[in-house]
Amino acid sequence: QVQLVESGGGLVQPGGSLRLSCAASGSIFRIYVMGWYRQAPGKQRELVARITSDGSTVYADSVKGRFTIFRDNAKKTVYLTMDSLKPEDTAVYSCNALIQGELAVRDYWGQGTQVTVSS
Image 1 (cartoon, rainbow, N blue to C red):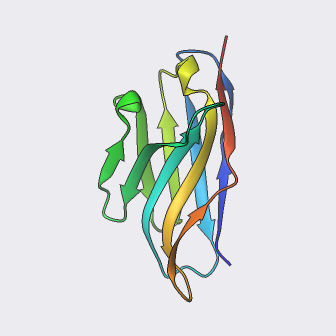
Image 2: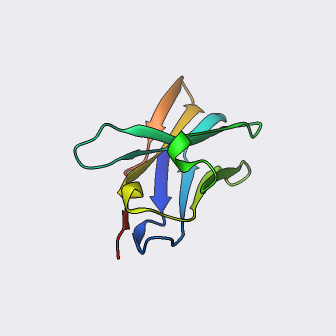
Image 3: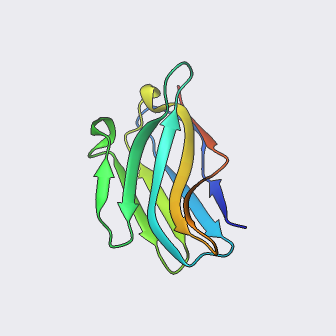
C-alpha cells in the first residue's frame, strides 16, 4: 500500500512564505515524477510544479521565480517552497507521484493541504 502524506499548509500573509512537504511510503520500487497541484474554489485543478527523479523541473508560469520544488530521493519526499505568496495562491495543494509499486506503475495522490494567503 503506497501513501503520500502532506504537511506544511496554513494561513500566511501576502508576501510571506510557506514550505510544503510530501512523503511517500509503502511498497515502492521507484518514484518517477513527483509534483504539486492546486485547486482553488470554483476553478479546475492545475499543475504548480513537478520534478523528475533526475531533478528536471517544470513550473506553472504563475509561480515561476517564487516557488521552488525539490526532492530528497533517499527520503522519498518532495518539497515545495513558496515565497512572495499572493492571495491568488490560495488553494488546496495536493501532492502527486508516479510510482512503481509491487504490481504496476500508477499515479498516487495525497489528501491535500490548505494554503490560505490573506491579511
